[in-house]
Image (cartoon, rainbow, N blue to C red; front, side):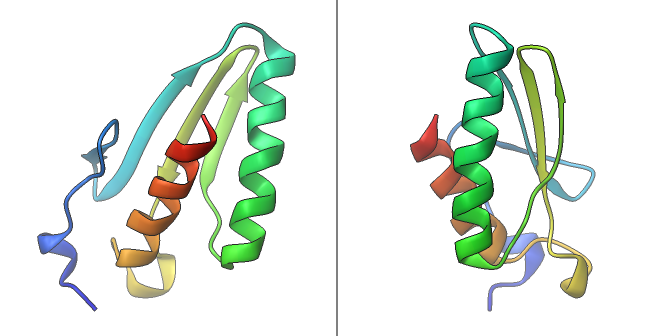
Length: 86
């Protein structure tokens, strides 16, 4: 497993406070919620889940491996999967 300091944020993501972070804006609430449902299915399948929030058409996502107390390749993999679902 890579050292968390060696982990680079995938395109469209940034490292903020030791977490992979991304903010997305959709056309409306329905589009945002639909995206979150797709991510939820992918996250459940991966066994790794985002910390996130939704306000109307906006979704804010943070990824961190709590069991490793930092970033791991699981976070990068899930970020890449999430990016493909946008």
